[in-house]
Image 1 (cartoon, rainbow, N blue to C red):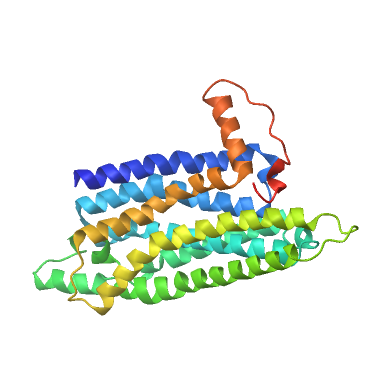
Image 2: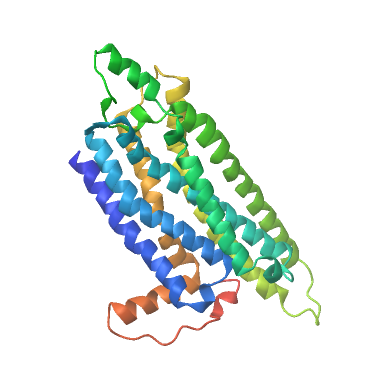
Amino acid sequence: MAAYIGIEVLIALVSVPGNVLVIWAVKVNQALRDATFCFIVSLAVADVAVGALVIPLAILINIGPQTYFHTCLMVACPVLILTQSSILALLAIAVDRYLRVKIPLRYKTVVTPRRAVVAIVGCWILSFVVGLTPMFGWNNLSAVERAWLANGSVGEPVIKCQFEKVISMEYMVYFNFFVWVLPPLLLMVLIYLEVFYLIRKQLNKKVSASSGDPQKYYGKELKIAKSLALILFLFALSWLPLHILNCITLFCPSCHKPRLLMYIAIFLTHGNSAMNPIVYAFRIQKFRVTFLKIWNDHFRCQPAPPIDEDPPEERPDD
């Protein structure tokens, strides 16, 4: 128990400051204000909430307090909302990168700041609908009530609060995983494959003297696309094990699931919220430069030179 709490607290202590730094960087650097980085902010907000809200609630559930059924259900739902928000933000980022390489000349007229905000709001509304579906009735209340009444008890059931006690595995597998997790992940894989194909196709073209420098543009797009595809890969790697374990729980109730394996799967899901800022820092120069400026200005008391609004990230090798 102590080891579990310690690891969860460590994840939260990395996740919250790291993702706050991402939001801060977008706020102070005008070069990080396009649609992609707006969606990245939405993703960072979800990751901050994982560290500040979901992890404390997960520790509470692990302790297993005695609560009313609907109280426990309310504790279990935030992680569903935030997971869905992260998936939809990743999907929005993938679509945005596709449009940047598919229609580069019309991109800024198609993807306006207003439309990006509408997309972000829409993603969050849909996330709340999907994540709160158990509150609307798709839960284990009937089974718990039958056991509660069989013991001669009355009123709302009081249970030991555990995720699988209140959340239906049918909901988690058939609705959450098979509808709202797996199809978007597969769609994103197809989108990034198409993005890489379009970029490679453009980079292999011979550049005419009057065509400007598309090699520079598509070289930058290739670098950023690789970084964002890495974010997607890490998300899938972090979340698929837990969903696979949920499938085993539903389709093979008698199968034994080692407790250690469950803990590892949970740590992966929570740890994913701490991974993204690290990827941004190492892979995207605009973030790296801005992170260093924030550190120097606010933590080392050594003001850094002004941020170059168009740093040499345009180079293919950055």
